[in-house]
Length: 401
View 1 (cartoon, rainbow, N blue to C red):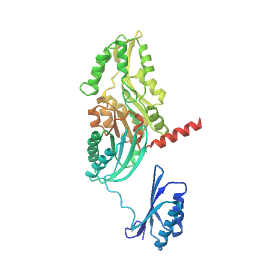
View 2 (cartoon, rainbow, N blue to C red):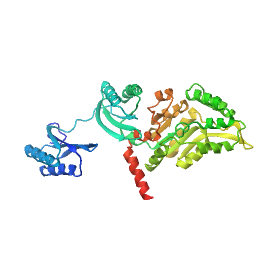
View 3 (cartoon, helix red, strand yellow):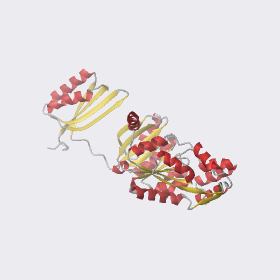
View 4 (cartoon, rainbow, N blue to C red):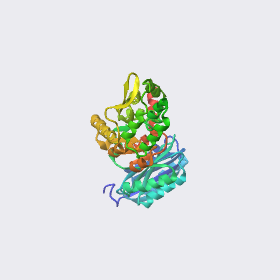
């Protein structure tokens, strides 16, 4: 009979206690003489406390195996439980999802509420692991038995109530196959809005801010709002663009996000309703592959108040995503789009994963998932990349310098 036969007797050996080097090898050394087959292994360490579970086929002399494992546990100063059963693990139920929960902090009540909503939808939590400890706490739950869309809707409501971020993605290979990440620029890749910084030079900051806010809320057509705002910049010295570029501050975590994705072989793009005169140097500095942005008209060393060429508005952002994907040789299903405003909605909808980053309510509601933490590298956790992996890669790169 095969080990997967549900009638085959199996043993679950669970060892708990203070972790130390050699525990895992000692347990398998004890099992080796019995010629058992290893069907499953799970090990976790929390603050120096180890839990090791090993599922094996039962040997002929089950009693002697139990005594042998118990002796090993005593010598290690640990506790062991050996439970007899039948067959391998039950297959996970259909409707599989990855649920990422982020908080700063992450209260126990929030985790309790999220777990409760998963159960309410008929889902089962198969596995939980922490993937980041700072600057936010991030945990990932593997869930089965419930429709991902239904789960996303239920957890979005609970996340808002608990003031944490929860992302739900269907499980499968495509999550790890994302190969192109495209970001909005203003208030996403960088802090603030470039046009407002330029407006400060012209003395029209209040007027521009009001129009910007209306456009971001989706109350005003973006192209028209841009024309109105740019018109207010007429006569501003073109040197103001250099001054603004020097003052631009990246969003916390932006460099880490780009650096890590580039190491993993991702291609990156930025698509902006802002201006190429500011965006392109930033993209070049970061090593970003693709850029789409508006261009300001300059005459006699001053801004004319006009935009040259087609405006990069809501439809154009989605078109830029498709163009970048085509040039990168990546299907749209393997793309990630990140933005915060209403003019990002088409781009977020077209991508394989659309992420609303510190976004307006209309964007949060429409996107696949939303993040409210102020750290752009939290996007990495949605892709299954852990903080430890990020730090290890940085340390390795530093050692090579």
